[in-house]
Image (tube, rainbow, N blue to C red; front, side, top):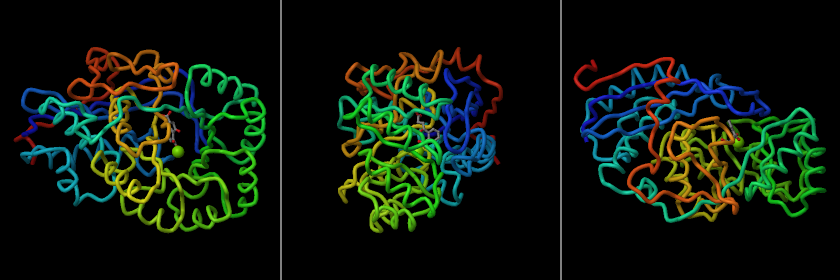
Length: 373
Ligand code: OSB
Ligand code: MG
């Protein structure tokens, strides 16, 4: 396919509820969307970089400049066979994986439409439905935290993940376990703990958590492996896993027993599939993480989650938990059993609401074939 045009857009969308993690609080999102035209068809991609470089070193503004000056021009010069070829085109650019993913995923989105197959199938998906969990942010009071859990348990979600940090952990887990003794529960520290906290982290074992996500430094394997040796609970790595090699190193070193795959964090669908396969071959289950996506990123996450080794409930949940109005149609809904049905129609399976996107757009730039250079 020859890509004729790439439109970069920044949209601003307020979250229905603020989302707080150990690294900060988000009340509204600034999101870069990629709209890609080829063969009279339109593909979409969403960049998951945040407003600040707090989760990773990327942010909306760095993704924009890299997409505009380095990545989009490379795509506009080529005749691309499929999404799997994009990584090679971007190889010279180091890092900036979220920016790369937003463009690569738009190519996959296009390709699924051109080939007239569901995106899930194109990626190698096999599931008809995906199991869903939720990630619940840090609340103001423990009582509010319990109410939030209550709401999500009642909605049918299969796993509750609680964001935690020093001072907001064992007390919360204890209250939650008393009330929901059997619930599938995990926690995510987003790198809030250090070596001095090892004994404290060991005390999490009593709560029978499914996993402790990224307790230590965002770029660490070694100390996570020291910690995993001392814990009964599985460590799950999120931030640390940037690619397949990282997954291999982490698994080999015993730094984790579970991996969270975020397609943006690893640089696109090709690398996400590579991480998935590496983990599958070594008996390590994976699940799909979330980055407070709009419907476009969410649709892509659903397709990815249909791969066989996504055997644990992910952080892919209903549109209405995030947005008053999502930018896709239909919105993503979750059944009472806590499942999302994987679309079976060609492409991403959800229509993009371009009218609404136009209203939300605060910045737009178009790059065209022939115009680059
Ligand atoms: O660590 O998984 C994380 C959101 C933003 C940045 C990092 C993380 C998260 C979430 C939210 O946990 C997942 C979601 O509901 O989209
Ligand atoms: Mg995480």
